[in-house]
Length: 592
Picture 1 (cartoon, rainbow, N blue to C red):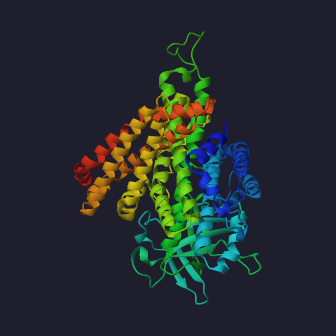
Picture 2 (cartoon, helix red, strand yellow):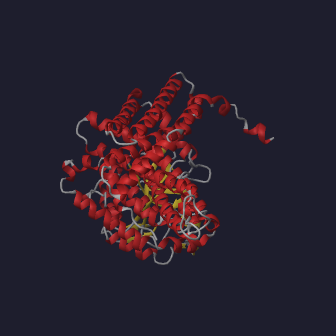
């Protein structure tokens, strides 16, 4: 039984991630802490009572396709309607189009709850909200007026259409084409694959955002345009018109998230699907990245949601399952496996890493909010760079954590974890896609090293490292038992991060790009583990009472500092010393 961790979420928002900075902005003057508490509590109730029961149903039913129509699992459509009625789709939408204009931090917290309830359910609205962001920033006023109100309310849903059979992460190979119709519209032709919620019965219209090339477009990514292509055309009065020339040609059979329809979409079987340009011709990738960057944080949140639910289910099972006698147990009969030291270590790891992912994602959301709210060019630049630095870490580390924690959950369940009835395997199957889509975690690492590490000539990462040292100083200055030891561990990890950062910056400056890229993935892990340890310690410093929740936060921080922060030295060595072995690897020679 899933229980929404409302207390942990609110503590992380307020005491770790900096929600007070956001609430202090004039734009959110009416958003009190009490209202924040009420929003998260109600979101938690809805997730636990209405979304969580859908997960097993969706996994077993799937999304069958019949005569071009997708049937979502029983009860899902009705729950989505209630979700929209509750205003959850419009949390961050522009009030001009019916949105509530709330901070990204609250959206991130709510999305964690939806994903703990059912990752397959939550991914559909995630794409819709991304489409809303792209249209708000790049679409013409006419398109905004016609489409945004119903997207913001959730009456219609949106999709993102990038991938093609021959073009995955490399959009240079994209072949979908667009032709000017001469009346301000375009005709779209081509096929897109892996389109989440590309066809479904939740809403009576679906708004597809599609990347395609014009006939005279430049080669490469500089020649890609973005188009709005609705399933049904929309009349001037807002009513639905004719069916557009777009159809679902198939639904994938996947490892996990079975309740989410992953579609192959065919555009232009006849005269061409009618579409409208978003932004400027040949500038579509910049528009799509508005959607993708925030979607990457949303995918990181999926890791948090799955990790939380896997942890809860593992703890519940470990308290119930009895095997052997735990060391020091003098009670009669066998001990619950939760009392055995190895299981204790496993459960501690699951909870600590889930809290690390939560804190990093919320911190990322804080930076996104501050980039919008900050006054002055210097402040906006700082927070924009901070959001850029944190996004690949939040996406990659958190989704890796989701998989790792779900896998540990199966292990805690033992043989029963390998049996589908317990649900432990389902969480692992669902989590496994998150490190792959919205830019694989390897691509996130490359982005972190090549684009984000050099921000402001490397000064932004140096300032970031300085902030981590301030957290260490606050722990040391607290004069509480065990906190000096935590500070010492953090200092060593921060030193590893600083040395690795300097080495990578120097390698890129000297043109040794292959060496830098070979260390990208261990560097992202090093940065994420160091930041995660710092945030756990920050939370421990703020936990000064004797309440069980506060004692648990201190315990998690001490465990992570003592057992996990030490891995940064090995990750640093991997970055600095393994490049020759990585670059010298010859797959063809080994395969022959």
